[in-house]
Image (cartoon, rainbow, N blue to C red; front, side, top):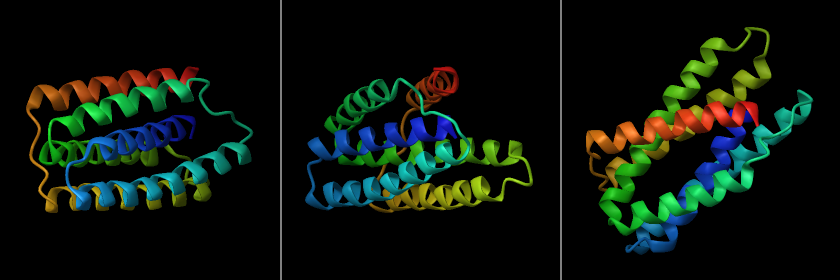
Length: 159
């Protein structure tokens, strides 16, 4: 859950950074709405971490600040690219959650319910971004995104 918590902090940063530079008021509004969902996810992860007697990553400020910068950079590339970035991010997050759900003990129904709800929202965000005009990102960008997420996952798990 620590990794998921770190991911939700990063999601807040990405959406906030993208909203800061969004050109369209509709895109800015959609980013704000998605950020609210991610805020719910963050609260769920925080509560579950407490239930499990675990602490969040000590790098939360780094995850947030770095993600605001990445989000703003993607937003500066234009709304279609920004929306494509959301779609790809949420696709990668859903895949991460699928892997986490597969590893989760069957008896941990509370964590499973949280992750299932988060996954449904992430898929919905990605679909909405595509329908709003998101464009496919180049393969090297998608690969870089995956590499960054792996570094974050590895680090957040440990620090």
